[in-house]
Length: 207
Ligand code: ATP
Ligand code: MG
Image 1: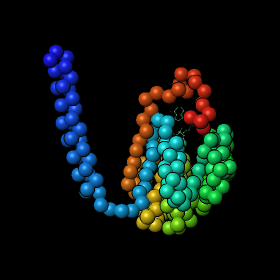
Image 2: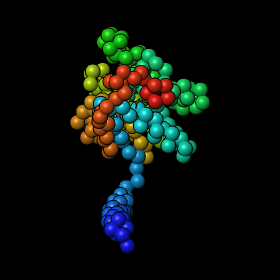
Image 3: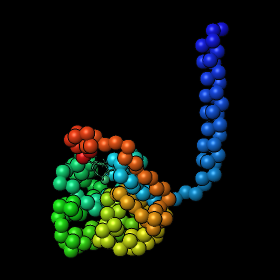
């Protein structure tokens, strides 16, 4: 056997041992997780991928015929593919958007607060209704950060939602009080973004 064959065999054996170890860890974790209930997920951070992750979960839930509600707390100027798809192809899904544009465009604090409260009034009943399997609260963190909505009301509504219901919150800067009520918190880190290299936001990828 050549030296390189021996090296390959050694690497293969090492890989196999590492994978076996990994598998036993994963199996043990699966065994230990015996609580069956809905999960509260926060996707925060400065990198790209928060809302698209939430819509990935919408697709997953729909695959199982689950009932989904989506509330978007900031509406971009640009129509997004997910909005178009939900409106045109899935008209039965409860989909609400805050009527105003980005807050730095409107520059109207009291108007923004009224819009935020009206939008929260769409979201809150969903968090009380056990018929919803998944509720997405897209860009909700900004409403807390700008003090447009009372954080405690949001935390209470999430904490007291029906046991089987899952909820996904997205947006930058999800703070520690919100994080405490969530079961899964992921921070998407920006390593680089095409925009910084002058590449325009891309249809089907960015919106
Ligand atoms: P996505 O909707 O693509 O998952 P996101 O929800 O993580 O993005 P938002 O802050 O809600 O991010 O912004 C939405 C839009 O801004 C998308 O077009 C996205 O590509 C873009 N974007 C997200 N992060 C960055 C960034 N770090 N720099 C520039 N543009 C960004
Ligand atoms: Mg987003």
